[in-house]
Image (cartoon, rainbow, N blue to C red; front, top):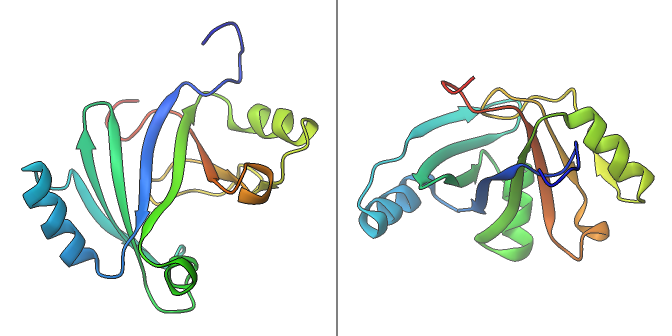
Length: 144
């Protein structure tokens, strides 16, 4: 990782907010010629999710479970489209501390668990040029 212990290891996924997950899954299935690698939902995060594996990166499609969910509010304000980029890292808490010291607005403590069951935290778009950044710790399911 270029000598930096807490640098982003790789892109884990690119996330897109969609109005209707079933319609979006059908579209991406036709577009890419593959089925989702994983589908599920999280009541904790108020989302339905589908993950498509494209090489070493996943495309994450997110549908809000209601207009008051984070994704529902995002779509209401901005419409469907790109939501965030996620970097997989080895030590989430150390990375978050480094980011705070650098002046980034970190959202989350590193204790929260994302829809894939791994610790996650975000960097607010206001301190990242308008882009929401997610950091996720560890390898994905089945690769640990």
